[in-house]
Image 1: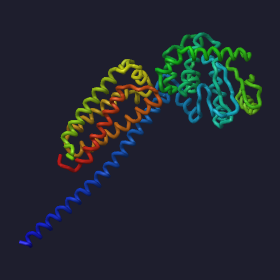
Image 2 (image 1 turned 30 degrees about the vertical axis):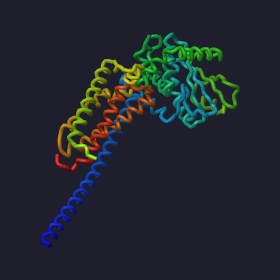
Image 3 (image 1 turned 120 degrees about the vertical axis):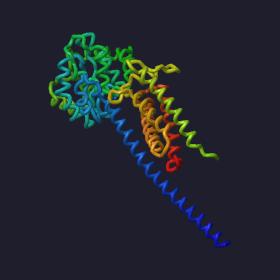
Image 4 (image 1 turned 90 degrees about the horizontal axis):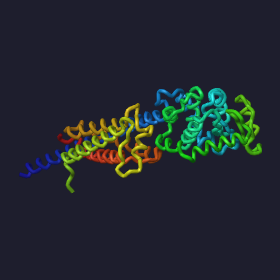
Length: 254
Length: 143
């Protein structure tokens, strides 16, 4: 009788040990699978985020050229409104430009990239774009669209992309479709907000005010440049036509 | 305390995934052709989100990815066994992670809230919870 009880007790013990071992092994498998699942989910979500970000950083619109180039050029340089560069930089170089102006396009492609690389990226100076609308009435909505993009931290991407995709002046190419495609390729995150703000009186007034400022400074054409720094007496106008001259002006103002 | 039976978890996941398909399909249809879902509470948040550059992924509306995700989750809820239990958890975890990212975009980048997207994010969170319980409790158990 007691031998039988012992056998049963041992059997139950063995079964319990087996069940515990099985439960332990199940937990280990679960832990391994859970870790693999979390890793896989992180990878998939990371890929989705990267794809989502690259789509909004430009290049999403196939009609807009050089989005990747512009985004590379401006990558890592801070922007506030229409100012590119470190907010604390002592020297400010101001470009008074008209987005429809072909000479400004030439400056944007040939001269300013060197200045951005040498003086702005280093934090020596910041570069501000101000509208000086001289071509025709389309220059105002174009300038306002740039400022509205600047409200969302994409002002300089917008300006650079506009110049690189500029059409022939006074041909009416600056319509809503063109401006929207530039804004999207520039990576403006909230297009509905951009659409509201670019038509707002507040921003249209800024375009008119900077044009008046350029006229007050005595400028007659675009692009015109001015510089302000510790060594200047307020905003001083410049007469320059090369990256070296702009860099020298920045140095002189600092 | 009585443990929730796997059958109940699967029924809950089926309903949640079916609702998710409904919500994502509505967003996809409303977004198509330049439109936007109608925010029941007003405020224009849905329009703002729909017009944002983040509403598409590789040229495809994000809601289409949502429909696909919910459909796969519905499939895992309807099937028995370890494979659907594990697949359901993986899918729900991925969907939950992406929903967190999309909600972050709405709150801090796009600056607008679309209640349909919030509804989808809540459904995906619940699906994640249900599938997590199903996997932890029942993987290794009889189908």
